[in-house]
Length: 577
Image (tube, rainbow, N blue to C red; front, side, top):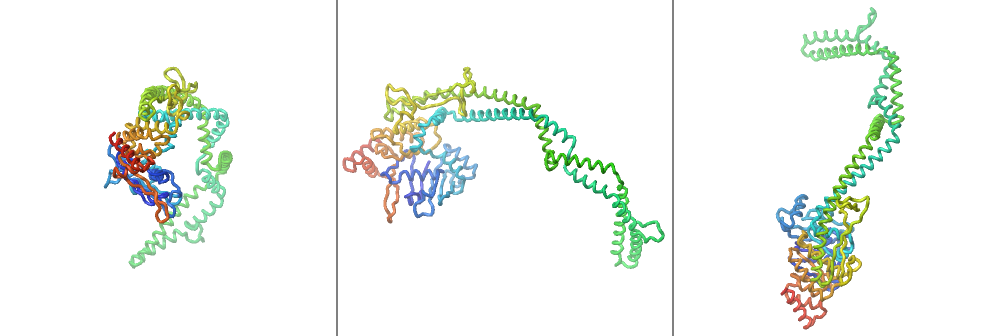
């Protein structure tokens, strides 16, 4: 639950700390005292939208901290999430602090002192606090929310989520089938061209690096005469020529020099390195000579091979001109041609196979949609009765609240076991509408057409009361719950809010009604003062009955002896209940 709300330099709040307790907490004060600012600040700590406009005039930054105490069992999903993110404080494992700092147009989010992404802060906050303001009441007027609330009451969230996943899979299968058949039709139209391309590329049998190898070989064959002549010259200098006037061969000269230096080394040990170098040079010369002889044997002129190279290079150039500027691009085109032809042969069959899978899944979805509908129908009846009973306690004894389910038949929809085919969405085949008949003899009509602001607020409170036992969120905040509700109904609303708090929730209510505020377990009042010519909002808890009586009397607009007597009676009646 929320243990402390700490606000600094937000709007007209310089510094404020609020310490809500368990049970029902109310926040009162004159209009403009800053009650809504306190709720708005809490929303900032929970990840709400922020702007520079919320920072107190003259301050460098604004800050809000929300301190929570975690209950091990009730908050186990939250604790698991904190541990997954490494955010749990091991020293105080039952404590959690959500914080928001706003600096200019930028803001930062923190969890237990560690900076986190704003979406993670919102995710964690959604497991801790549920704020119901006027916009939340208005959400009851949107039929799209009614199915969500009914499924929550019926405990169908997991089944609906699984249905949505299967609908997503169905859509993917249908899309794949469409893509497959479209590709098959395209491949049929281009089949002749793909066959021609593939035949040419397969015949060419291109490979990476072949063009460079052929060019090098062509260069060698084209310079055959010079290569033979220069190789012969090198051999002559190394091995010598069989003529009497020819100079000694280099290899022979090195051999004689090595022999002489070997004799030197025998006579003088310091000449041994010279002899070793000479031996090495002789060995290198002999190796070079052997390599030259082998190389000369390869220098055979092959005019036919030169012609073959030219023809092969022309084939490669032609393929590159048609299918890309590189062998890699041409090979990629070859694979595309092969895939397109395979698509032309098997695409229709694959599309039909995917269609069959989609049809089987659609039949399965029909059965699951029917099962969801059946459970919703049962839950709709009990929810209608439960809400009607709650509304009776909230001053609407003759109201009829009816949860209506509708299905639209469509030949292109989902086949149900009863033989009908209905439109379906990720939530199933049902459309849910909350309807109300506030007066006898009136047919139930959609809430948006018949519910006043006060009736909408009471319906929201009735829903929260009915859903309380299945609601995992520990802290509930109601802002403007008394919108459109007069003093006569305030006590009834206060009693139901206290019952909601006693069902295991911490409840915080912002109210203008003394009849409602009298039911609080803890009563806080917001006051606006002027300090150093600046308006400042403070909040304090009214710890004594005397303080509470004075505030209740002020809320009644009669801060006199008679007014205080009325306020004391309100408080006594609420405490007795």
